[in-house]
Image (cartoon, rainbow, N blue to C red; front, side):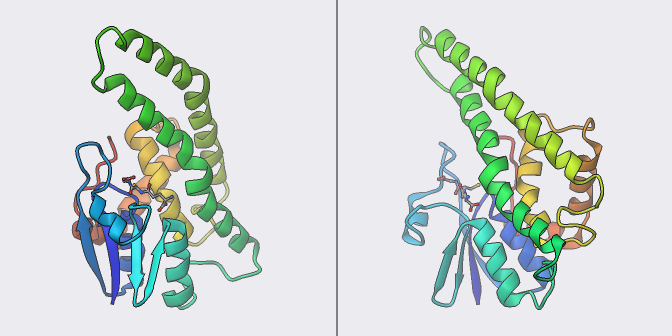
Length: 222
Ligand SMILES: N[C@@H](CCC(=O)N[C@@H](CS)C(=O)NCC(=O)O)C(=O)O
């Protein structure tokens, strides 16, 4: 039996979604974020980094959502959810599979961290300085980076409905997290209609909805 170590409000929602798309049976080990937003220490007993998702398949313990999705597609996909090897679509699939965590998420995570610095507790006399530094970093670096990435993702959906091409694939599941996070807390809105349409289409998928029902709260605002 496949077991997903799943943290609420997190990237591991993607693993549940792929498993629902595949129709595979699986169990969920649940973890609740602490007040700090971090995962509980018990997750370190599953994997040394203590982050979610982690997939356990028999003796195989696998972290990193992209690696987990690729593993599931290779091992259990029966040729579905990835374009055939050697095609241009397969290369696009590989690209977006890696881009999601390797390029899109870092500026989104930095924005989350700096937003928290601004709103977090601190001595009153430090607050103006901290806010000043934070707003400079966000204005000069993080905001422009995020806009560049959103423009790039938007343009990538110009000539095909899905990230790898004409067919829905696991790359769309992997890309869903940065797109959802950008919509929740980084200004993705109707000014980028293709990404908004992508969001509407993925959210309408029955497997996406079943995964939400099983996974529980998925609020990426904080
Ligand atoms: N690149 C990793 C990131 C894993 C990660 O940071 N997971 C977050 C959940 S969205 C987490 O476990 N956060 C809690 C913590 O860092 O303690 C992946 O895609 O799996």
